[in-house]
Length: 275
Length: 73
Image 1 (cartoon, rainbow over the protein chains, first blue to last red):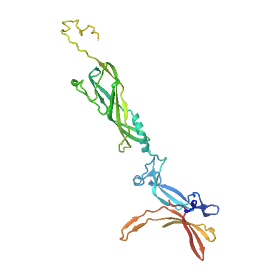
Image 2 (cartoon, chains in turn purple, cyan; image 1 turned 135 degrees about the vertical axis):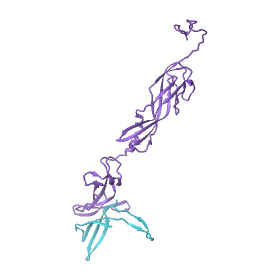
Image 3 (cartoon, chains in turn brown, blue; image 1 turned 180 degrees about the horizontal axis):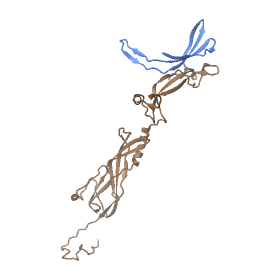
Image 4 (tube, rainbow over the protein chains, first blue to last red; image 1 turned 120 degrees about the vertical axis):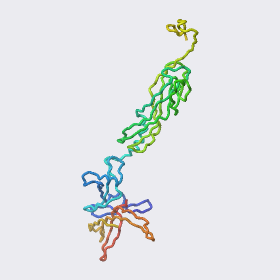
């Protein structure tokens, strides 16, 4: 190709074969027909019987941009030569059965949605005391949620996802809630029930309240056993509501036992006083 | 330079001028410094298609033009 500047811009001419005259013409303009022809040969084929030499493949150019990638060596010859005079074109390249796609990039784009759709167990909320607690008393709640591992197939790749609980929120069912915050809480021995904890709650009213624990998970994923990569965002999973019955307590003191005074308040068969 | 093939049909493209197609590649080159140490070794280049316009005048062949057929890749 020749090029030169003139007043109106670049003038380009190319050598092009003119079949009518049998000569190569230095014609103005346009893209020339490629004067070369090309072909490729598979590298590492054993005796052309479709078996590949594995050690040879390991040393050849890596063809992992798509499914069934194979290394090939390209050859070119001027079209005018009959028979062609094949000359190797380096470096070696790859051929694929399908158009290669950026499968890791596609997985990265989909992983957050996939993570939020996983059947992750939110864990459960434990109440102390349970199933009944008292109005005006500290009721201790704590979460029991565990790290979970999932193996899923994404775009034909094995993807291992690890979900780790990192934050917790409680909806106490009486219109109040706690969190999200990092404390999962913990069990209290029975003789300390009623103590205030990081995750305890005081009910102001009696009644049955549906308590929902929402556990927020952070995830990592690894593709085909590769290094773990963080999943952006969090996945939030809620437990089914658990009912907490809040009762009230009234303390009454009596001088007699029920044997001494069978009609006394609180004795068997005696109606309770109006509240 | 390694010449892999040469072809001409001996058609006169203009009086006493003929076209020759040549396929050549640049073999590896080693550049040495004055103290005989290796400075650089280049890789073998891909094959190029060249055209030479040659004229026969006065009992001798002369190259009128030698160019690449296409811009080298």
